[in-house]
Length: 469
Image 1 (cartoon, rainbow, N blue to C red):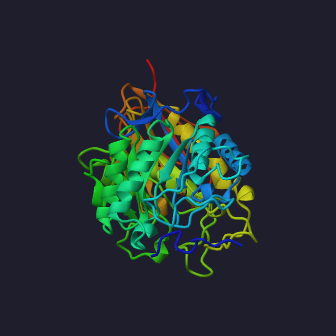
Image 2: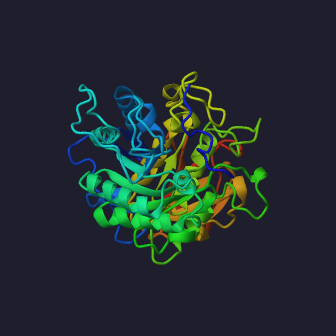
Image 3: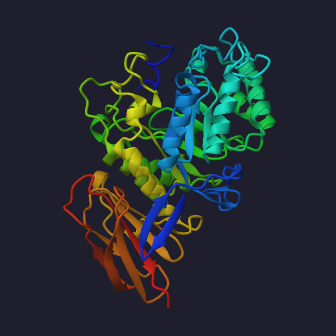
């Protein structure tokens, strides 16, 4: 399958509160220290910010730098902040001809080794405000909103097209590392929707050079669909955490032995690797994009699917999740930009797609219990099921979680938490409401039946807490 942006190049026309088992989400308060540099946790599986657990809730705003004005960027960031997102994944160079929305080029002569830099940075003065000044400003506005930018230095097509070479990657990597090493709210996504086994010398040069001049920011590799950075780069010294791309094909479009929609399988494999490194699904199937991307008349992924990818990944051990929406990721404006993947509405209308509004409940749920002690535990579920009926579980020292996408009944093994009794409740990934599920003896097994009828999209998360003595 070709990369997700193969058809786009250059075409123009809070805070968590818990009360009696209920979890509510409010937008976090912005402070000057809201975005300290991210670090890998001591156990190697999660991230921290300022010494505190950090749940990555990302959005794919891939073409933000080239298609949004400053005013539009502020609108985008404010809305995503309201919805609970704290990371935005953005392309720095999508093509060699990358420009700002006003036509200011990123490169001289399309050469990644020659960034186009002008004296001054005042947008009101002709010739001063260049592409890199704009990226500086976007990073500052993201920081003001308590958000991080996860930057793809160069999309994979620049390497496959020959513009990004080992030599230009070193020059470009040094430029990025020196310019942005003091910016607190950045993460580097080396690669860019590309097979990790192709052009390895280029990606090694880019990753290692950025790290040499900017050792203080985390870095991963963004691979092509249904692959994982760990397959090629797990032991690379510049790779701090793994990233997989599980999108964008369905079970029906893959062979019976393929992982297909089972993104949790990649996460489980990476959790068990050594050396231990965190893992995240950085590109699941996007809301409102056709199954398989390129097949005419294919159904589109919906909010139910977007939730499932997130909950499955985090239950399996991911340190967070990235969401995407078809129109938003390409900052679509019908009549101005040529659509890819049947995009059909304005980006600012699509910002409030149901899945985007529901992602906050994923973050709120996991932030409501001690995050760094949580570990996946598939042995908790006696009858885990397959595909859409799969039930995933994880637990901390005094709590256990399970997620059922279809809302089918399942049996949980008790006795793994301390104490003689446990208390349970259901949590809705759709709206964050809770439903009591009872108090039980903490031994043997218990059959749990989620509210409502069994059907894909009637998803529920189960919370089981040890009862304090």
